[in-house]
Length: 219
Image (cartoon, rainbow, N blue to C red; front, side, top):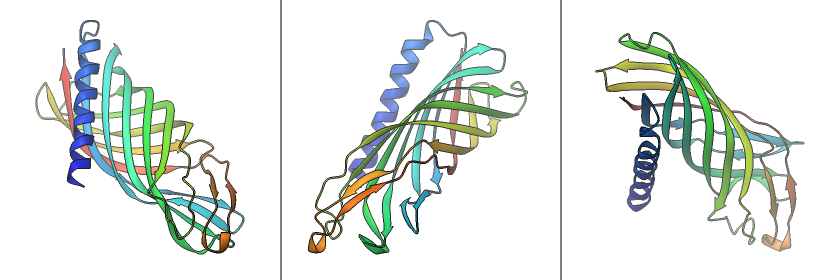
């Protein structure tokens, strides 16, 4: 677990350094944000059955580039680690963990900052991009097949406040609404007694999250 967290932190640091170096020469002002929070999962129903992404933590790194007064164009990367559960009358009558699940979000968007010169700066924004869903460590009591990774269109909205500690450093508190589109097609086969079958769910779902961290404003 410690090694995994260290690798995630290293990836975030490399993302911020590379993005900052690339954009510094052309941007009059840019923000670098790193934060951590908790997402509340989501459930996709089909008939009386469902697939469910459980609650879990998520890391976020964002680079914002000023395009107009109080308006930032932003590139965001989010990583969520959780578990995928299934309840299916044929495959698993009771809810069980089907696999671990990693969600990698890559999003482009814009955020409007209000009263950015004050000690407290409210903001609201939206993004669009993709989410990469990667199941792993499958539950062999349910399936002996490896579940495929999928890449889906996704969009999100966010809002919150920044408490400006100085002209450079701020503390950010943010809420997210995340919408993975058409998520949830898996095939479960080779389980006990050879029971298996397709599970296909095509629906836009919603995930909520709360997080906090630091934002750095550089000229």
